[in-house]
Length: 71
Image 1 (cartoon, rainbow, N blue to C red):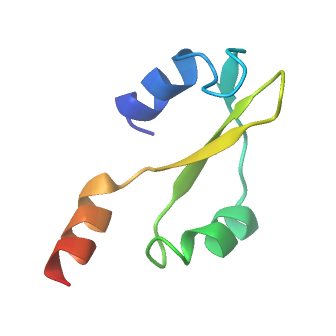
Image 2: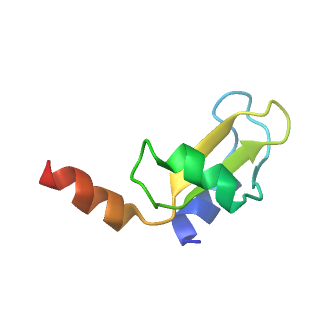
């Protein structure tokens, strides 16, 4: 996991201002949600403990950037 994901988890929730945490994830979860980003890319969910707002952060931004800049 990279530092930017940890920094995101330390920022307040953009919806309600609550505390956010890096939630646990399993292979089956990130394989399903990563297909829209780039197949095989790990995404890490950061969720608000108050309202449940969840954002997904890629653990490999360079891989995603290279893929989409080619198109």
